[in-house]
Length: 387
Length: 152
Image (cartoon, rainbow over all chains, first blue to last red; front, side, top):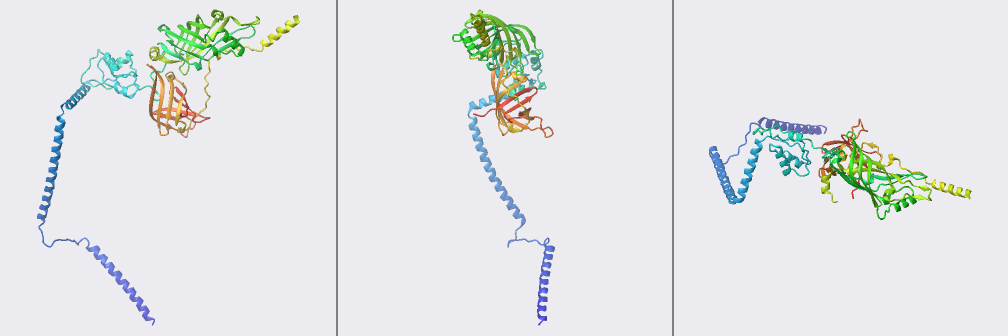
């Protein structure tokens, strides 16, 4: 009873071992023989391999012939289209002319020395224009600049720059020699904007516009009991002036609104407006005729002198000469400070008096503290000035 | 009678004495620009994004600029317009390009940052009190202060 189960287990183990051994042997046989076994499938009728190759070649030739025929048809079609295009004579002629011109220009460019105009440029497009080759004389460069360079491009007329940038007429052009292009001067710019000029030109006539909110005109008066000043910041005007070369011309006007002059006492202001006849003559006006220069300090951008003109108060005009100091502030604005004595009676105004005891003196000191901004050369701005 | 006259004159003198002398000192005649005192500090690119207009300008180029406007977009593109005095008088220049902000290094955090406009570097800092309300841009002795403007 006990032996029978043991035998059964032994037989099962032997069976597993046999199965495992058979699998191992099969795997070993496959590994050993796999490189040596070749499987070939053939039809029943054996064919010569040479015949098969010839047939394949014949197929290739047929295919190539077909492709060649399609290619020929395509070429025929293209030639037909080309013939149609050639049958349009005008367009072809223009095209040929253009090509001929381009070829001629290319040849000419290759022959000429490369010259770069040393001019400040305002934009990329003019820069490209300015780097074009130029005829061999300064006159030619001027012609070129007139014809091709837009108006907003500043062309330097400085003799040294011209001689440096364009070939002199005394130096004949050497054909076939291509000179090294001169480095184009770096575009002067600030915050990416082209800035044509840094400094206000004190030696040429500039148009200046008075900055009303930053200007003040007034007077100092004396009276029996106390002195006082009157002033206004309602100032307008503009003037043309060569600050350091006034002989070039000087003219302009400065106006102050008489209705806005304040002395600090309302009653006095009211009386003053009455005396100045502000209803009929609301503006105090100074017409600038000339500037008599005393001292010019270019290092400090400071000019002292005397302005001459006509002052109109309450409808009465009188010549006036006022010593002034002209400077440039850090924002490159023109600052004009000056003062001079004036008798109010000269303008038909009786000095006010209170009870015959408190009297204002006839002579007052009028003064100006102006700020003006240059708008550029006077002629250019006059041409565009709507006034 | 004499006493009354003396009293009257004294009273008048006292009344007129109510008006003190108010002569403007010659050094105060010029109008002082109402410019805000600003403490400048370094900041980040957000100080620059938006629309700005010219508040003040100093340096050699100040004489050429009458007006100046900028719009810096967050994406690094900018456009600007300036009324510049040229040979033909005041003329608007309009341009656009690329901008970038280079923050100061961690070693010198107080140093101004760098605004690069089309490859050109400028020192830039901003109003310490209201950061981004004003920016100051400097380069080679030139200085411009731009104030932020809301778009309308």
